[in-house]
Image 1: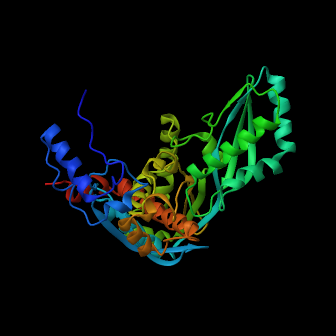
Image 2: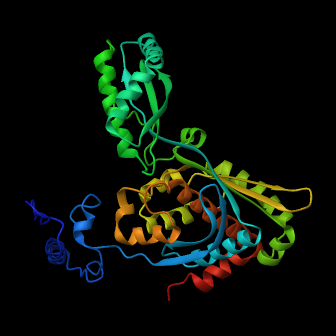
Image 3: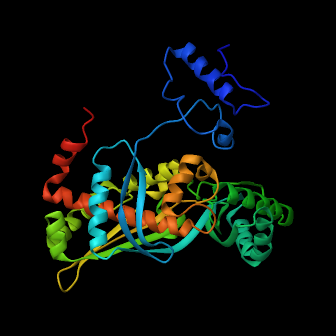
Amino acid sequence: MSNKIPRNSENDYSEAMAQQRREFVSEQTDAGLDHVGHYSIDPANTAGNIENFIGVAQVPMGLVGPLRVNGEHASGEFYVPMATSEGTLIASYNRGARLLSESGGAKVTVVDDAMQRAPVFIFDDARQARDFGLWVDENFTEIAEQAQTTTKSGKLRDIQQFAAARMRYLRFNYTTGDAAGQNMVGKATFVACEWIVANYPGIRRYMLSGAMDTDKKHSQLNTMHTRGKRVVAEVTIPNDLLQKTMNISATALYKARSISQVGAFMAGSNNTGAHSANGITAVFIATGQDVANVAESSAAIVYADIDDNGDYYLSITIPSMIVATFGGGTGLPTQQECLNVLGCNGAGKVHKLAEIIGATVLAGEISLMSAVLAGDWVTSHDALGRNR
């Protein structure tokens, strides 16, 4: 039997246990963990966030700003902490932030809010499954009451239904307050499903997730119907300012968009923009979000137009931004500091954070698209992105 990783059933979140596991790793692999073991947080504070704690992964962090945001919850200039190991990224986002700010700021709106769990119920045939769907509609109020017995902040908004074979897929849509809410809605939906099974005859069996919630996977369903926060960031940039700052015209950018959208369509991309995942990931790491949610959150719809006076309108719609300002990794000390920088720590701040991230992503989009056309893309990476 191979050597087991050391654990302490009474107090596993201590520096002594972390040190013991680091020594174990060194003995097993001959690898040193001096940097992994160098940190300022109390191991006790990581309970609920990690198991077999040995230390921290230190990712370089930079600052973008000032970024002017004209949101309904975030209003003013912000300095955005971003954690990344990709050279040129912070410089590029700063250039975009300056252009947005000089254009009056990014107007950002959270237009929808929903988190899902999607159970599936199996019957003898399709007719039984259809009849069950009618019963679900008729008993929605009671189902919602059962779901909400498990949470104070989660509210069941509606239940979408999808039929296939002898199965009925139910997509429970919740609002989740300041939490991302995947675990919250899983527990709430489980209680609701158990009540359904106890009160509706003829169900062969059910699964708590039939995969239509698409947890940590992109789906066209989420692009159409929202998962997390649906965020729209938009700006109108004067053509003269665009030319001065980015060395590119509105017309050239607009024409490039039509070409890149064809390429994205042919590739089957989940994104008609340039690189929304870069900004989202960097802010997610800094602020304690579940980084695996980038798989969904990186989907984006970029739209551009030229106004009658020649100015450039640009928007990005992020249909599945899954963020939190309470719970999960947001409670860790480093991440709390970054949330405090943004004024987004704690309850009542999740829409503000979503608006700031939307504006940040828009800054990155205009900067990279301009750099590709102006010829700055390769040269900037060559100058700033090489770890010599």
